[in-house]
Image 1: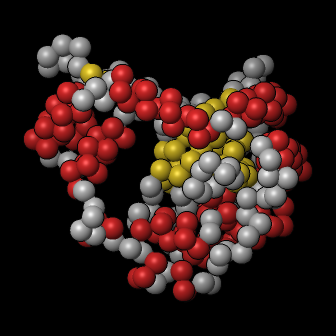
Image 2: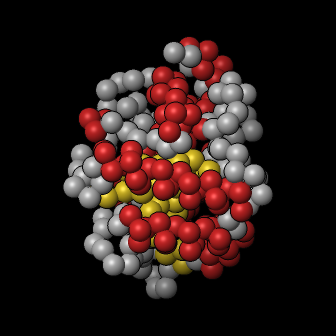
Length: 280
């Protein structure tokens, strides 16, 4: 156990900082409410997803619409992402340039394993899916881009925990993520994940702790000089397609080796994302 990583000084309450702009944070939470499969959102739906009062949401969506971050084709119609937000997305995508060479590698991995391959990043207290690759000649599970997974009960979250530095872990704790299903402290789970990565190069959540009881997954963290923290690549499928013994013998090692090749390709000499000390 690492109690020094659970103390109050590592859980800064930035919302009490005088430099924290609450109105801006609320506006950004409105933008984060949108998901890839949405056909627009009403103010009431945004209020439900963000927990903000509907009157506050109405003011924020009006302002965001005036600035081009949201668009509302007709009065009283649903809001949708606007041209300014889309332009910012293209700028942000430059930070994920490594996904271009990853495209063929991850698609080949999906085809060879018959699993859904995922790319995920930490989104505050959750893990958000940013890209997926489906096997071309096999049925697979489907999770849409933007889907958010719990940190402590998903393999993607476990991989990010195991690869996190002291400061990165402190930033995660500040977001107040949910504890794992069995109540294990996240600091302990972080070290368990790190031990998995050191021993086998990939992370797996035990079946009893998974957020989805019928889906198996394995994940490997990845680092890019353009990003502030680790991200994760994963393979997932129904239990009968991806049983534990197949993860250990085939799919886990294949994912690990594919991510290592990508790591070398982007100029990090294949150094694992978890190579530093957890107290760095």
